[in-house]
Image 1 (cartoon, rainbow, N blue to C red):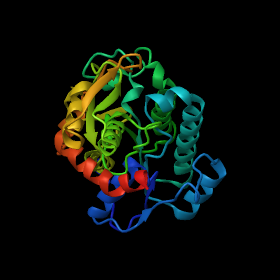
Image 2 (image 1 turned 30 degrees about the horizontal axis):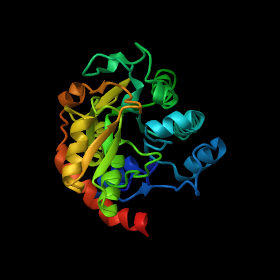
Image 3 (image 1 turned 60 degrees about the vertical axis):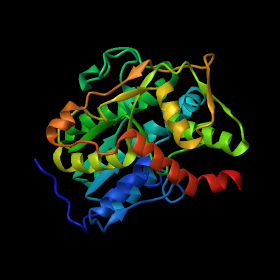
Image 4 (image 1 turned 135 degrees about the horizontal axis):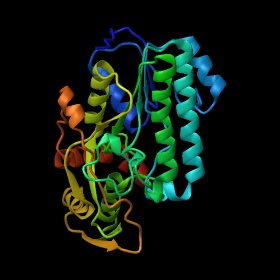
Length: 318
């Protein structure tokens, strides 16, 4: 069943300033949507149940992209588990319930590939959810995301809400977080190599052994997939959104090094955790619906570094 939005239909993008939300806004605007609803954290605290309900009652969106949340890499997840659990549980619960309350016709909830068991068979299929222990370094975040998926399914079963869940792989691109204390691996590598380049250093330390394998999807590809799923997907349970190939962290570090600071040598700090050994999603269900990614990793790394130099690097040194 196709869900069609007119250009003037109100669409709420929850988390529009983040990596994913800003990409969805770009994609919707490029598609001609003129009535995009957004709110900064100062304007609307999504952890505040009464505020969220009041805001949605006032604005009455026809569709919601729920991509807001507290996110971060291994360090942030390991040191702030209570914050990651509480913030994300509250955000998901408040927006989903308020959306039901005001009669939102379609809601797309964005999860994370960390919902799957740490040692899931590769590539990971959607039925692998809840079949084994989670990765300890991001367990709190994963539990919150799993709760969001199950909430969408429960609201579908009990209330008939057309709420769907998409599970993206590791993301990167414009508006990523490049803070070394809280960022994911790819933006952290860009920042590390660029800092070393500016400081004239020829050695860059990378956490772990370099052996774990990860899949990376450009956020503009994800945004395109989200719009596609909003229009054409209406089933319970998560659907994977991935690129279809993975690389070793060592290969990724070399790719970033070659773009950012070719003179640098890489030192792997094996005293630091690797995280999940491998994480590659099986995105065949989405591909069978007719969607494919279009941005190769090497091209995406180069364009992301260009964005970093224009938007982040001047602030970092200033």
